[in-house]
Amino acid sequence: MDRIVKMFKGLAIAYRNELSRCQSCGMPLAYDRHPRPGQIYCSYCHDGASFLNEGTTLRAMQDKVDVLLVARRAPPLLRLYMRLRLMTLQRWRGSALSRSQGAGAVKARE
Image (cartoon, rainbow, N blue to C red; front, side, top):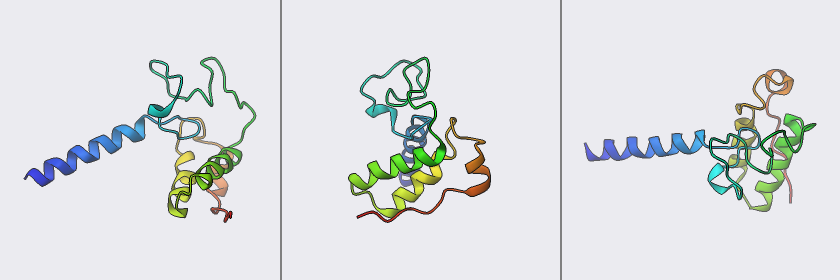
């Protein structure tokens, strides 16, 4: 019984962490250097009034996040997960790319 309780506590923490991600780039808001109460976007994407990268497309954001993950030596599966995860975030839901073209392949970078 204790194992089940621990498992559900772990799932609850993981779910809470997933909900507290920037709804534009997917960065955990716990790592934001300039947190604001009730924020849903990190300070790298939004200044509180508007997006800092207003003209960015979903594809461009996926590429930007992929470059950051490559620099941090993230495994290919995590990079693919983040490409797919970005499409589910509030800023990108319903964009033409997420409806018609999918996430695209993870690019091999050296």
